[in-house]
Amino acid sequence: MRKVLVLHGPNLNLLGTREPGVYGKWTLADINEDLVRTGATLGIQVGTFQSNHEGEIVERIQGAHGEGYGAIVINPAAYTHSSVAIRDALAAAGLPFVEVHISNIHAREPFREKSLISDLASGIVAGFGPSGYRLALIGAHDILKSFERGSGEEEI
Ligand code: CA2
Image (cartoon, rainbow, N blue to C red):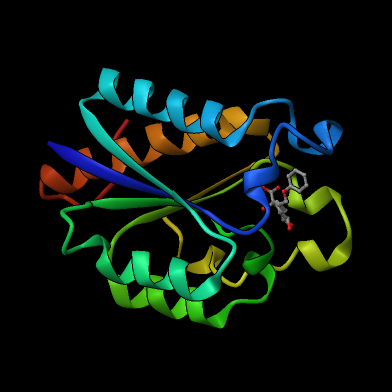
């Protein structure tokens, strides 16, 4: 069975409790349940992990291949804009990944526009609210399917 690891960065454990105007009303548990349900319809086993600690996120990325994951969906949250360690871990892991942001990082403060991982990502989803994770999972599923066909090219 295809496996996708979904990683959530710092403060995303607060979803649904504050700033609903920016990040929506869903809790992190709501998002994870939606992903597991969506994954089941696609034939994907979804693993989820949230941490406020950079090193823990790095360790999950490092372990992903060994745990049988074929792709990663990641919202590094504030680490998007600062973490060379997460960038290096994603590069070393060699797994395709989709970067997701709940908000449109290009329509906010200028410092949020720069992502240290976007150039390595297979795709980016931003500004669709919590359901952007579902879009990212569908994208990861399509990437895995195209890899399995041996082309490595995305197909419609
Ligand atoms: O839009 C996104 O998904 C972000 O990755 C969220 C990060 C932010 O630093 C990025 O620039 C964009 C912040 C996550 C904080 O989440 C909270 C959720 C509820 C209440 C407070 C913070």
